[in-house]
Amino acid sequence: MLSTLGINEKRSALSGFVIERTAKRMKQACQQYLTQAGIDLTVDQWVILQELNQLDGQGQNELARKTFKDAPTVTRIIDLLCQKGLTKRIVAPDDRRKFHIFLTQEGRSTIAEVLPAVRQFRLQAYQNLSDDELHTLTDLLDRIFDSLL
Amino acid sequence: MLSTLGINEKRSALSGFVIERTAKRMKQACQQYLTQAGIDLTVDQWVILQELNQLDGQGQNELARKTFKDAPTVTRIIDLLCQKGLTKRIVAPDDRRKFHIFLTQEGRSTIAEVLPAVRQFRLQAYQNLSDDELHTLTDLLDRIFDSLL
DNA sequence: AGCAACTAGTTGCTAAGCCAAGTAATAATT
DNA sequence: AATTATTACTTGGCTTAGCAACTAGTTGCT
Image (cartoon, protein in one colour):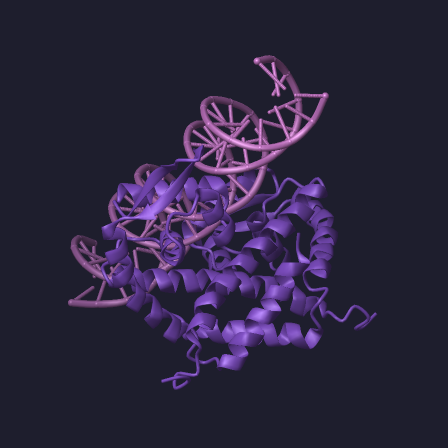
């Protein structure tokens, strides 16, 4: 039964761990780049801002789906972003349950500040990977992702 | 400036995201396997138990270092595990600041229950990856990990 | 011996995650 | 038209994470 499954037990035991610890360290490192740039934002708040920067005025559920966060989490992150004056909630005219979330002027300028820090972070994170390797990595991760749920 | 950096901007923007979402989904899926097996444990609690199963009687700092959790988090997870009667704290005879954490009998039998569920989870997660690919994956992730901090 | 520096673990605060339950508005049924 | 189901979002509870400040015990220095 050596390799009938194609998966080495010890290696597979390790790799879940390796994925999680890398994700964790990336988040921490990214956070440090933000903090050092004097930006008062968490990485998760940044993720939402970034998504709004792609397409302004999305509803919370859309944001949740796209960022793989759940609805309550998005509610709370938007609460914080609104407190900080970076976004605002506008009730959807056609559906009064729904909010469109928009970036404020300040939100936009914050994004402009953050982008260079985030690029620097990426440069560091991927400095030892070629473009091909990065492609391979996302492919393998996606195949795991797609095998679950 | 096309590929002078060796890293495609869009691809690198995506991959942090891909790593995190895969880690997240793996944790969720693993949790489901535990819950469906009627096991009242979180994945993080399992990680600590698993580490104690490798080497019983470790101190909390050792556990923190090995599982890449921080000290306060480990304190709280051990609190819960002790409440559940799966582990116990024994003051180190040579250093009264320190605890040795030991599995109880019940802890051991819980581990025996959990293992099959975890193996099933791994089978599902890695079903579309060869042993080689799994090796490549952990290698690439480790290289990112090592580039940070 | 006495004081500084360090180490193990704890506690409090905030953010984020998941779950489950709740509200209010809209869509579907009959 | 009235009831039912669904949808968008919110709230509360519990766990994990990171940070900072704290206690208490240990080690090093002089």
